[in-house]
Image (spheres, rainbow, N blue to C red):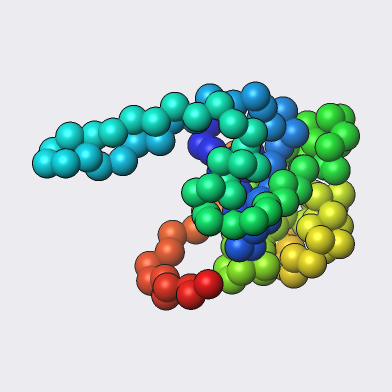
Length: 141
């Protein structure tokens, strides 16, 4: 599966996440070394620490799909509850049927724009999966 079906950045420091992938994780960072070589770094730190380090932030927030309730998270994950399309920092497009996750996002200060999904979700893709950015401006922190 694609990572965005279980984990999506929705603001500078906020992410939706399916609770089943919280950890422990084994993350491999691949960067360019000198010449044509590649450098590999294996990281088993908690996801929050990995994200804070990569994004140079003091803190991050993981917003659990379904509020962390495994039954609700499973149901909403089936309808791409963790797959959100961020159209601006703190502004996302989601499927309206994921009402628990959408309400949590709203309470966390994320502006949630919902769209109907009865036919779209049958194709097993969320709003982010069904987008193709053609142009994106740099966002200065």
